[in-house]
Image 1 (tube, rainbow, N blue to C red):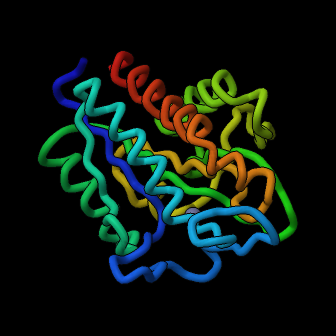
Image 2 (cartoon, rainbow, N blue to C red):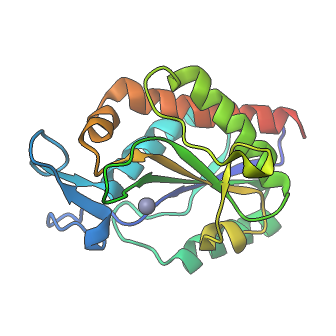
Length: 211
Ligand SMILES: [Zn+2]
């Protein structure tokens, strides 16, 4: 394993404060008609993002792979501060890649997994393709795989702040749609969470082995 490597881990938005407040904008939560999620029938995206990254961290700890969380336990750090942390440590500590964990909402019932890179061909595209493959292998029979093949690869492209302002290869993963009841139920399944975490770890190991 490469000694000059660190994974920069981002869990999108904020979580629940010690006093029980969800610290994130209303668009990052959804109240389902039925089911039990993070607060009764409310699904909190920021809480789910933290659950997944915590699982990734467990696996990286076991493997002895270095990582730096750029998010707070519950505060919704500004994107600029998250990116500034990753860029500073990339320049002054170790090289690495940036993985941003999110779940999606459409308002119209869409389902499925998507992965984003910044526009154009960059080092991030290879990571996105690798991750797409791991998710397909681990979860392809359980989830919808959403893609844009117009440019010949599996990832979608967007000028998200954490993708365009990071100095290292960066991908943003949208793990299913939390405002779709079926997808939201999948997201509450510990095995599904573990498989999504496993996919990130396999992508990380492959990337390190390619250096
Ligand atoms: Zn999000």
